[in-house]
Image 1 (tube, rainbow, N blue to C red):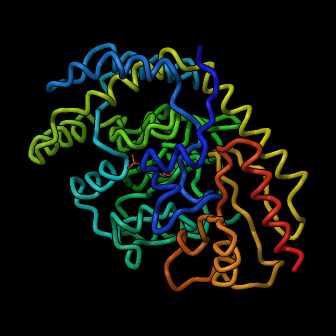
Image 2: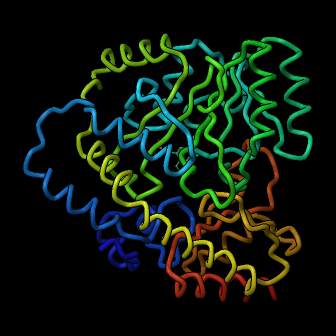
Length: 369
Ligand SMILES: Cc1ncc(COP(=O)(O)O)c(C=O)c1O
């Protein structure tokens, strides 16, 4: 019933997909983080049923229970549904957190490279940035010890590198932040594409934790706005819900509630098949990509972070070579502050093998120039 149905570029373009229509038509598009895979049939059927009945709605019991069931089934976490709040989108929720907790840009730490969307919701020039290298945690300790920090924003699984912060790292993070009274904001939108053990941060017993989630990535539904967040802080939850009212957004997107409930209760096996397919794509890339393009198989996400420094070309040349051949990737400069050099690009592998083969052929051709 819930087979994987790949979408052809023509179908995606006709369906107003940003991936294929942004700025120009791109036949070989690997840049944006959405999938060339149709939403599972069970969700399509539930949406078709709901589409005749689209009045105002509210967040109902089975929506919350589905979320709780998913956390138990996929991550072995007992989630109290009282910790769940609906929110229009992940980026909106993070932005609201910053406002509601009165966090100035200078008082927040992020790890670099960072998801490019963050640069739209706060001032990247002012935020404290720590390189995501082997010493990220000691850098963080030093920065927090220096004082004046109110929050750390982590992205786990990490976009763009694919790193998953393991239990020990999260435990150290929680210990450090709880001693200093610092909030931990964890963007876990990619959690369903974890290829090794993933620990949701909400499983830690610390009040000042907020984690952000959505079925947008999981079931390829980003075009239907909607997300949810989890927090151990009752006070923050109340505060957020009030502010949603003030923004005139208290009524949820009913279609997103339906997608979340059906996805989390009926599409477990579908997600497993999609993950297996994507992981085989990783392996295929590993066996077939020119060795001058270096990468490691990611712990999580469906994207690959590729180091092209051995080609000894600038990002401008990379971009020109790709676009001449109708191919597009997400350039490394999108994930660091504007003035910094980054000889990486991100490749989205949530696509069918034939498209991947065409992409590899092209990348290999110009790697041999
Ligand atoms: C890490 C991360 N956070 C947030 C988002 C955007 O989520 P939303 O559309 O719910 O704001 C994305 C989308 O690519 C993402 O990769």
